[in-house]
Amino acid sequence: MNYRIENIAPVLSVKDMKMSLHFYVDILGFTNANWGDDNFTSINRDKSGIYLCKGGQGNPGTWIWVGFDGDIFLFYSELKGKGVIIKMPPTNFSWAMEMHVQDPDGHILRFGTDPNYNEPFADRTTKAN
Image 1 (cartoon, helix red, strand yellow):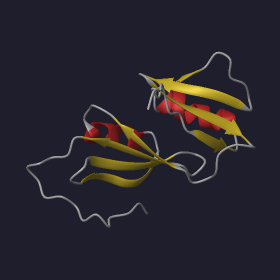
Image 2 (cartoon, rainbow, N blue to C red):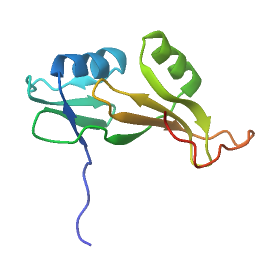
Image 3 (cartoon, helix red, strand yellow):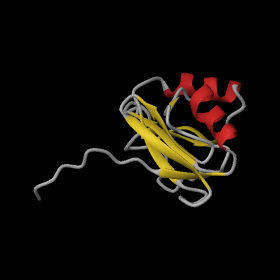
Image 4 (cartoon, one colour):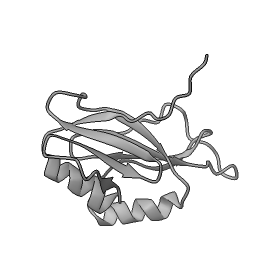
């Protein structure tokens, strides 16, 4: 194949752009695009982004994998302290140490970092609440 994929960015359906921006920008540290408006915008952090769309695009309940490099237990504590809905606390799987976080619109962000190979792995059937 003679092409290169430059970027993949999901589009999430939101009900209240202000509430969603508070979650993604103020709590998770994303930056809102300067061209965004109350109906459509892009939020970005490091070299990744997500589009937020009020109304016509995306479906409620989308799941997104967010791989990161950091202390997932510290991140978990920070999010709990901010009242974020944690659907699954950090759990050690063979593919990642993973935590599930719910955004204001019911989308699930699967934050994952390197697994802990010195601890047993959770059963693959472990699911978010």
